[in-house]
Length: 91
Figure 1 (tube, rainbow, N blue to C red):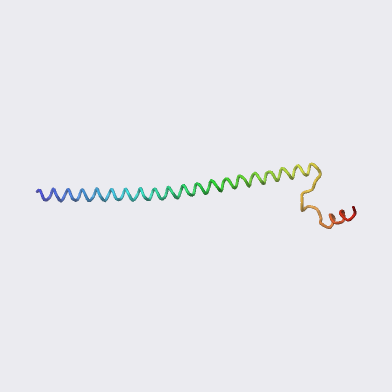
Figure 2 (cartoon, rainbow, N blue to C red):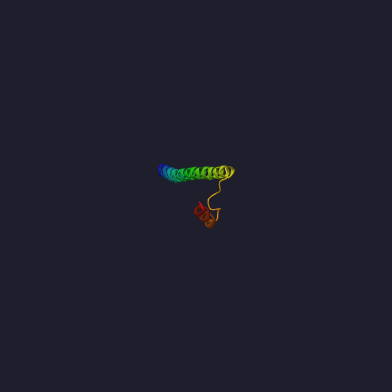
């Protein structure tokens, strides 16, 4: 009877040990996943920041073009280069 109790104790001890190891592995995996997600979050925040800067730059360019048109200026690239040369030579 004593031997059976000892064996049962060993089985329970091994089972508890295996469960503890399994929990530890899950915690390590979760930690690695969390680290990867934090890295991805940082990259996405940087990408978002760059996109916001790009949107601001493009919207400012659009505003500048509108103001130039109101002043009677032309957007570069819309005039015929030959005509510009003729105008310069006529001066």
